[in-house]
Image (tube, rainbow, N blue to C red; front, top):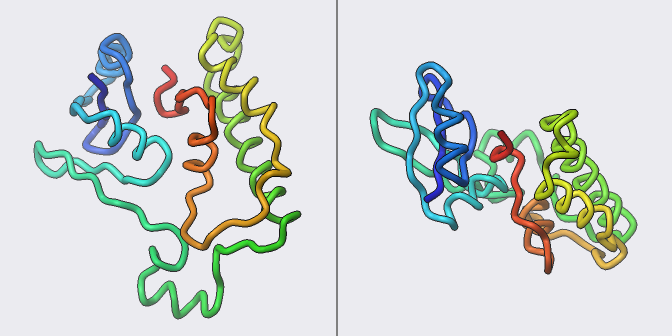
Length: 162
């Protein structure tokens, strides 16, 4: 079973195991809601936004790019797009997202990184990604989803690190 943990009715973290769930529930005013593997990944990579309405879990699909903008946001953005067609810019954006992910893991774990083989394997994988293979980004393409869907990418998520 996998879980979404809420604290004071606000999304707090993910828990991929019973031990992680039990550890997270030691926080005051915490509650766990069971979710499927696919929903767990969608929340972890930002495709879904979890909310707690009363006692019910609601997952709202997040739409990337211009398709996810409100009318007011579109008016402000004008012709702005998330599409990247320049290969160098696409590669730079991929590298930036990889660097952010690595830094987030290192920040969350701190001195415990050396005792965290799953997270170490993700960092090793990320450091080996050949960013030159990415030559563009579609307007609605989730950058984190792209990374986690790379062949061999360990499915270790920062909101699940406890």
